Image 1 (tube, one colour):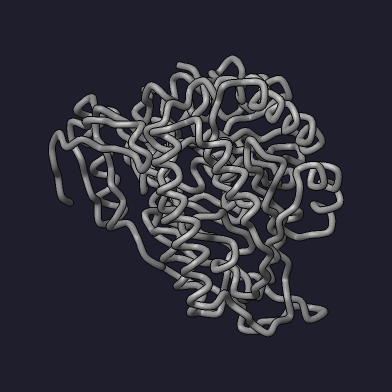
Image 2 (cartoon, rainbow, N blue to C red):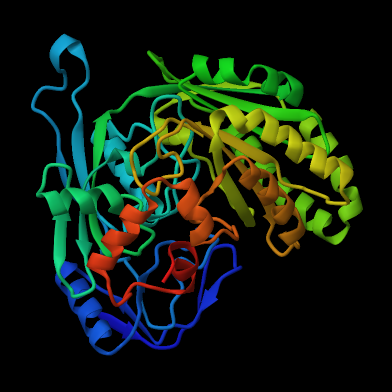
Length: 450
C-alpha cells in the first residue's frame, strides 16, 4: 500500500482543497482495514475520496486520505442460468465491484456481458462508492437512484472491522445496509458494492426544444407518459430542451459519429466552453448568447444501449447546487426561480436542469418517502456563484427542499433533521459505528451534528 505525504487534494470543480497528513492507496480490503486502524490509533481522521466530482467538502480531511484506485474492477457477476423468469420477464442478476471502480468502467464491462443497470445519472466519471454515498441519481418515473439498485455492500468501520451487509443479513447488517446505501462516508469506508443488473436493453431518446410555458403546463403528463423525462431551461429565455428516454424494441439507431462529434463535443463542450469564458469576462452578453443558443436547438432521436443514452460527456467545469422538492412543488418553484432571475442583475450562462425520481426508502435519500423533482443550478467555474445560489436556495427551502449531499448548499443538521423523517435513526447508527468520529470532518459536523 503506497503512502504519500502532504500533497494537496482538489476536487473536480476546484472549489474544495485539502492537505491530508497521510495518503493511502490500499490494494485490498485487508490493507484498507489496516490503514483505517493505524490512522485511528494515531489520532487521525479518515476520509475516502473518489473522482472528486462532489462540490462539497464531504471527502476533505487533514488526516488520512484514502484513494481507492486499486479497490477497483469487477469481482463477480451472478446471473440466472435462464435469462427469462415466469411469464417471460427478464431475470435480475447482480454484479459485485470494487468501491473505487469508475461508473464508466462498470457500465462498459456490463455491456460486454449483455447486462445493464436499470437507471443511471447523466455522467459516469464518478467512482461507484462516491456516486452511491452522495445519492447520485438520474431521472425516472419508476426507477430510482444508483443507490436504490444496491443489493449488498462491504464496509470497513472505525476499528478496522469489515461488515458485509445486505437486506438478507442479521438485524444489525440490515440496519447498516439500509443506511449505508447513502452514507456520506460517515459510517465507514466502502470496499465493495453489489448492484442489481438486468439483461441489456435499448432506449430510444427523443430530444426536442419546447417553450418553458409548454413544459410547465404539461409537466405531469410528460412525467407520466415517459419512463425517463428531463429538461433544461435556459435562463434569460423562455426556451427549454427536453429529453425523453423510453425502452425500445429497436433496431439500434445510434447517434452518427460525425453528428455526435458535432453536437456533443463541438457544440456542447467546445463552443459552450468558449461561450462561458466570454460570459465570465463580459457578463452583459450572457442573455443575448442564451437567446441565440436556445433558438439554435434542434430535435433529434436515437436508439442505443442504456449507458450511451443516459450519459453524456461533461468537459466544461462548473459549480452546482441541486435540491429535491416534492414533485408537486416543481412548477411553482421553477416559476419563482425564473421571476427571481428576471428581476435581478444576475447573468446565468448555464441551463437549469430538472429531473425526477420516485419515492424510496433510504433514510438519507433526497427522495425518501416522496416522489421528487430536482432543480439543479450551475455556474461556470471561476464565476461568482454565491448570490445566485443563495437566492435559489431560499426558494428551494421554502418548498421543503432537500439538498443533494454532494453539491453546494448551506443547510445544517437543524434544518436537515426536519426534512428527513429518519435523520435521528441515521445519526444513532453513526454513534454506534463511529462514536469517536474517526470518519468525521467539518462538512459532516455541519450536516449531521457533532
